[in-house]
Length: 470
Image (cartoon, rainbow, N blue to C red; front, side, top):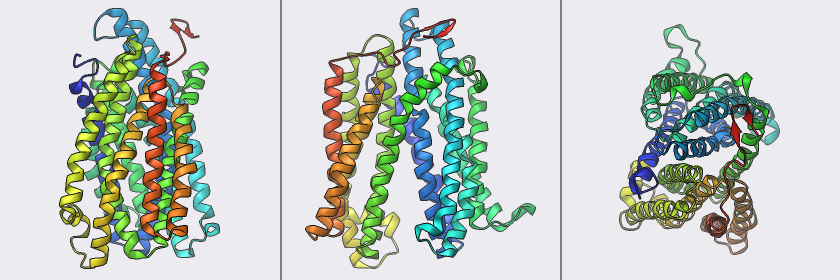
């Protein structure tokens, strides 16, 4: 198998930049939390609440356009098959231009809905039991974050376009620069440097919005300079084809709710852990953060393998999907095995970056034990994420939603409650339920993927000619 059709080099070439981008995004939020820490405990509590709600909305908005990368990859693959080269033909270029401008319209609508929901949540914080001081601080930050949803979702359209064309690397450099820009903007808006207003906690939200616009402009500039990508970009969202818009919405809606469901079950687990004392909650947060960092690498493998499967479908080579799946899962499991050795044999070293100043033996002991649960969690969660991507590559986004609804809400959450309260396992029961939810979802997705391979179907279900989509 060649590098371009789905061998290990092809998967790594796509997955590594995507994973790097995800890790850089984690660094961005870490900078925000660090800057909030300079303003005191109330700022951290309020800012953390605002970021939690923002990330829930942001994740669902991103889900609406995530499938655009697969649609682009399929169109490009079909064009390559017609030309017999690694370059798409004019028909494929027309398809991709139509996809990009239609996706921008969907992104704008999704961001508008997301901003309205975020502002509504900000106003409803007192009704949700938050103290007046926390509600007031969170509200200002959430209002400032709402405007940043627009450039963020537009950026993800361009990102999916670049990934679908197998040229994802340029966004990594842009994101790394954005970390420094974010830190500078945070300080400027918090303290009112250079004649800017002194906004405190709300300044962190405004900084995030400014950085989103900066990142969008920088990445759009790199695409314009890329001779392979520039001819296929159309920003004329007002010329969107209604048929393509409906297709993107049908494709993206299950992804949107799948992402939202995953974020929700993690939030529920965190809330439940808080009921078993600060030591258990602190230990859980640290263990979950370590697993979350590893998860970013699985996101890269998921998106990279998903794009390669879509391209194989477009080139009328759907039989390559099983090979791509095996290699993506092999890479994932090998990486997680190496990390798991650290969890098992050197837990204190793994925990040191987060608890190096912690002298509480209870927190350290609890976190060390939870790392054993984290091994199971990262294997099950990473595997299910890759399988969701592989199914998306085959054009099946509905199965991901169905399987997560069953695995998370029919298995995971009830198991959390039963193990934690009925069996009396406390925080250990919460993590047991979390692992069971991800594991059952992975099993359901694996079964669906195997059955889907026996019934190959085109990704889009549409045909294209010079007059439009049919």
